[in-house]
Image (cartoon, rainbow, N blue to C red; front, side):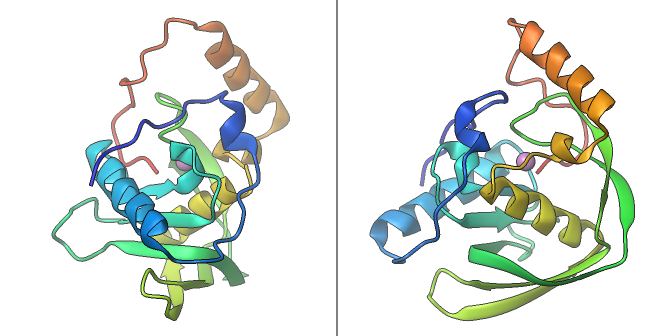
Length: 178
Ligand code: CO
């Protein structure tokens, strides 16, 4: 396992649509191992493959942010099959260090996917887990959490980020960051 560099906004790669996984082979297993390592090292509570430059539909998440707590979930080709309620909470993204904003999302989601052993699984989430699932699945479509803010706020953030050329990639703020 190895960590991989996390691409930072406004990298054009994290804006692209990721392709469905067609074969769960050695190469994909290596990517998943590296994504898990990268997520914990960041530290983060979720990571999508495009964030490390792989445009393929894989996400990992661990709402508890603890390697040994057994909260790790790996989802291949995840698809949201149900969503209900709405909730607004602050969130951030490892690709956009230092920015945290309140985002409105579904309160509860049901996601169908494959695990790394090629088994079809259904994952339900509410609260933080639901939020991370939605955030990471958005990444697979090139969507960032700032896209879900109002236009004025999004433009302000984008202006601030793109104009600060000496921004340090290691200054992710406090709190859990997917
Ligand atoms: Co993110």
